[in-house]
Image (cartoon, rainbow, N blue to C red; front, side, top):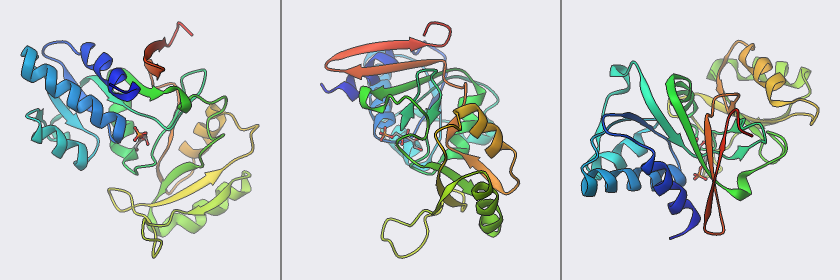
Length: 228
Ligand code: 5RP
């Protein structure tokens, strides 16, 4: 078993009977979906799920999990997802997969937000490694980019995988990948991006994670808000 599978299993053990569980998106989230389906099949764990993406919903359904329509959900017990960067304060950078809107809705609505990472995702500063993904209304991208540049941002629209056009988010937004000066901390950036009209959502998940499980060399370390 590799570290990703180990943290996914650890997370699945934290799910209790009757919970409504939010499913993340990406390779780590996929390992969690498999581990949760395995507990449900082999130990009779009764859960319902809601998914942050079509891809995760299909995977969960194929493995026999019940997936609710997003519109039906008023409350989520636990949301489990990966991340691209995690800071010492447990702020996150997410969104390389462009499913940010549902991901942040689930992160905000959940009683517990459990983040699963391998140790190489730990960073000193959010945005230190990856550019910050910023979903923008297509007609607004030039005005948004200008505002971001006025605040020291550097970057451009994300290209699609074939490099022959622009990438679109799951709901048709364009994505600006922007880097900022290292003096801009996660809280400052979060406030800035939340305040610019035309931005649909962005990849900084500020003070949303409740627990982070870090996998390294066969061990799982748990970091919790209030216990850093
Ligand atoms: C998707 C995400 C993913 O959780 C993040 O990119 C990590 O992916 P992986 O588990 O494949 O490394 O934020 O929007």
